[in-house]
Amino acid sequence: MIHKTRRRWWPGLALAFSVPLGLYLIGALIGAIVPFGASGAAPDGQDREIGLLSGPIHYDLLLPLDTETRAHFGFAAAAGLPIDHPEARWLVIGWGAREFYTTTGDYTDVTPGAVLKGLFGDRAVMRLDLAGPLPADLDMQRLTLSNAQFDLLITAISESFARDDAGNPVWLAGKGLSRSDVFFAARGRFNLFNTCNVWVGDMLRVAGLDFGIWTPLPVSVRLSHRLHIAP
Image 1 (tube, one colour):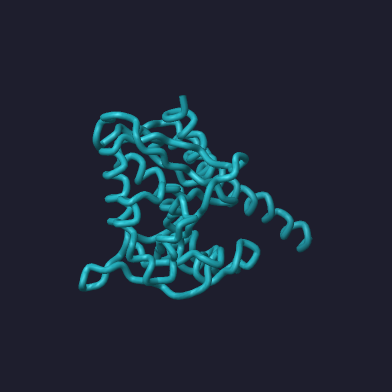
Image 2 (image 1 turned 90 degrees about the vertical axis):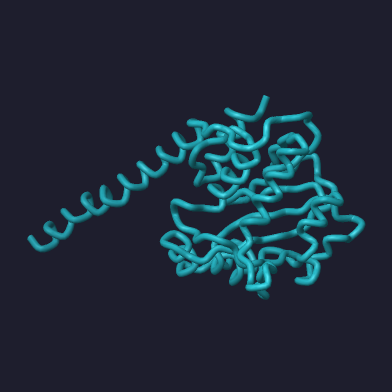
């Protein structure tokens, strides 16, 4: 009798987990489908190409390493990022959970504690890395912005950095996901509803692009790009 009573808990427990998960996934799809109106500059000529770089669980932005980009993010050189390297072509930049990114060597090193902290609330970081010429088979979506839209984008990204009393970005020393990436403290907190992919959508909308109103998952970003940006 005791054994049978215990078994009755399992359907309820499974339902308790599956219903919120199902609602979250449905919300992630609806959020990608429903566009949020562009709030930035209107196109004034299609002049600048950026990329959305897909990882196993999140997206980074790829910015062309031109004079303007180097000027905005030149402070990263003091943290060890060789932003002026002649072979560097792209700046890889993303927002994410601090413990997840700064205490792991790669995704296989992620601890359950870091995952739980990210789900329920963790301090945020900005991760910066470099890329050279991109391989043709790279899993990346391309976007073309006007100069005005690009200016709005890099300004919004710059405002995502937390700063000290002197107005300088706060470097966080520690290992990351590659040999060259560096981390800085970021504004906001990471959680299940405010993820790295949500940040990507926020940045694109601020730049004046139509994008899904809520994009917490990689599939949300991919679907939103396909529906609202890709030709």
